[in-house]
Length: 206
Image (cartoon, rainbow, N blue to C red; front, side, top):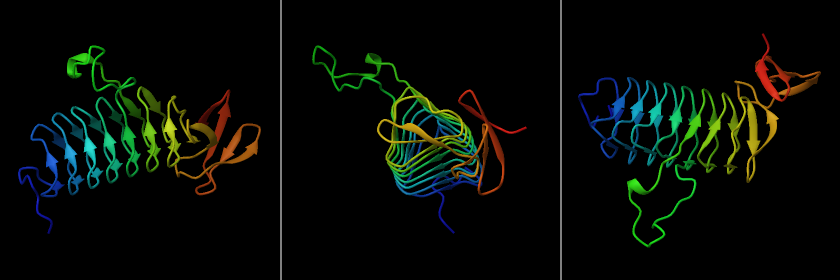
């Protein structure tokens, strides 16, 4: 049985080397692995996996059933909706124009800049070593290919890749690229679900 670092959190597994602030909320069934850090005010849902060395910033909400893999950096004010996948070494930035110092050479403090966040909508997945440059939103069930740099909003169900990331296909909820059947109809090869593209927007077929 793996030892819990904070025994008062019933039904939660926190490895002894993890750093979880007492002011963070951790949902039932969640696991926080070695050397991960969860900052004050973070709201972690149920059945979340936070991998080795991952970082979750102050006040960041993480929905139920998310997976945040090893060494991913989720900087505030990011928002992760339920069912999001954040791959190994992914970075969600929070400063559009980063500087260590002000124009007069003095060190920047928290009062010298306004954080901007990355929003990952329900079911979205961001592949290993990708960078999302805030402010940006990755849509529902979208997929960011490994090693991409996202600088613009990603539509629902879009598969984007590259530097900067651009849409190359549509994907379904199962994560596989959809097959184009013509006349705006797309079909998932895994589960047979159907989607319709209208004016560049993909939706599940009613």
